[in-house]
Image (cartoon, rainbow, N blue to C red; front, side, top):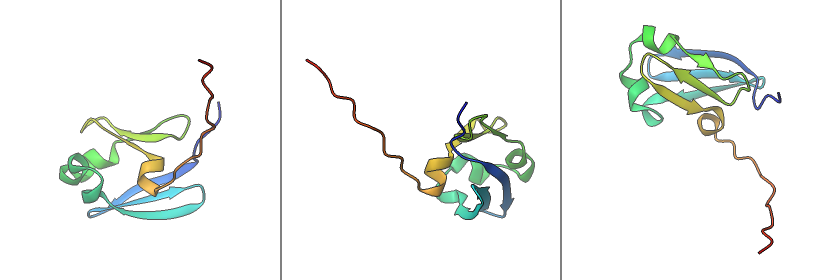
Length: 85
């Protein structure tokens, strides 16, 4: 299985999500990303699961899923598949 991202840590400081991904640190205002996480308790925020491929993070207590790409603003270029019609 190919890992999309290497997620080293996921922590919160107030409304800021501090994400250590692929050797870089990102500080994200969670209020702009997720109303559910913005309203969640610290305990609910700390209960998360990183997908095995490093694609996203799931918070089961608040039923929220966020992609790492979306959080850090990465867009991948995918090859176009030509249609033979």
